[in-house]
Amino acid sequence: MATIINMPRLSDTMEEGVVASWLKKVGDKVEEGDILAEIETDKATMEFESFHEGTLLHIGVQEGQTAPVDSLLAIIGEEGEDFSALLNGNSTPEAKVKEEAPKTEEKNIATNSTIPDGVKVVTMPRLSDTMTEGTVASWLKKVGDNVEEGDILAEIETDKATMEFESFNEGTLLHIGVQEGESAPVDSLLAIIGEAGTDVSSLVEAHKAGTLGNDSSEKQEEAPKAVEENKTETVAAPVETVSNNKGGRIFASPLAKKIAKDKGINLADVKGSGENGRIIKKDVENYTPATQAAAVTPSTNDSTSTPSTVTNFAIAGEEAVEEVKNSQMRKAIAKALSNSKFSAPHFYLNIEVDMDSAIDSRKIINQMPDTKVSFNDMVVKACAMALRRHPQVNTTWNDNVTLYNKNINIGVAVAVPDGLVVPVLPYADHMNINEIDIKVRDLASKARNKKLTPDEMQGSTFTVSNLGMFGIESFTSIINQPNSAILSVGTIVQKPVVKNGEIVIGNTMKLTLACDHRTVDGAVGAQFLQTLKTYLENPVTMLA
Image (cartoon, rainbow, N blue to C red):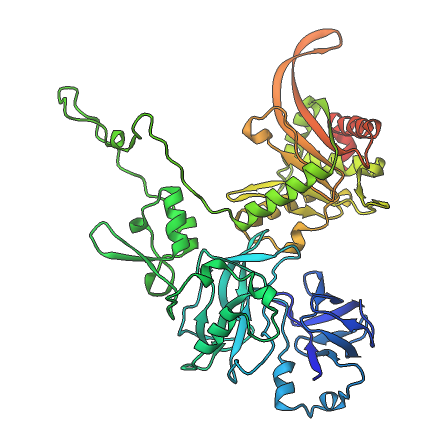
């Protein structure tokens, strides 16, 4: 039977979308997972994939046209099928269910006899283009709660960030399929929403047995082990409890408890913002301990007084190992960097830059109102200008061709508690130093607060990694593919240097360029560094 595909809501503020381009035309075969079209939202142009298979029978919004969210975008069905009733609005009850077609964040598994009327099966969404599984950081709703369209159901950790997951359905939360702290593949059972009191036990069992909807048994075998092994599943999300300083019970989510343990925070000191005062992840992350009273120094005349911390020392020779579950970000970093290191032949070039003029120029620039640029901003600006003069460094390797990127989009590596993210400054060569500073500060703040969107971490053509603020003089980085190079920036060091034949005190900074030898030869990389050095040693050339 023909299925109506509606204009999806691809961002939390999206009200309408523009079809930038169709990747399928009427009459084409469509497989589940195929990209149907590129849709421009209020934030970015995103690929929209199909969750159905069949033949593309009708296109409701032509390229360049705008349509509201949930309006008819396309119709997919069997080849030659009559879909005129759907266009005329005379859809059957079954077709009406299909009109509530899946959005990219949340889709209803294909209906079959095991799904009661009015019940929506919510699956683990694909929140980034590289996401294959997600971890539920926290649930903002519990079983039995009413859910309105637009309510935030949960915070889900992807391979790039922790993102809020919004409901596109309304009803009562009947079942939670992935508990806090657990991981599950994309499209596996996340939750069930429907009318209060609806029995969904057969639906849950069908999911476990791999017979739900059109999901193949192969997909079901990839279901999260943590769910399969939970033989005594309850109807409510688990609540971890601990005791406070007065012996009372404290309610905290498992993730909050784990973070508190890792940070050495006493949950008794944390105020919960969740329902009924429950402590959730953000409460622990935002907790600032009060000033502790100074410890009493034991009397030298009291041989029995010893600092309490002594009792926490491990016995000499005792071995201990603690297992810490790898986060989705950690897994993504490991996979990406391993692929880069083992597939791209790296070589490294080093250069030392005289930073005396840069220091003087920065002081003058920062005397201007509402201006506060960093040395890293100056490096980013210099890289953007040098890439314009050496386009071969701004390339991407493919097996048959080398792509020369016309845009200069510089990624800036930012350290976050779980690892490393690389937000991107698009068109960096068209930005002045102050604009670069403002943009970098904004992206870094979002990164540390896990508010970066996937779009803000895509499209880099060159990357800068700076460890100078940690006192590191020089280091080498692994290339952030599909880039062809990455620049490692060290700290500014004051030391004796030779100028005009005399030994004087100067300020220098070491730069290391890691290059992919498939696209960048040694001489090309060396020329790029020479140009970069010229810009940094003569900052006036970068003030345009």
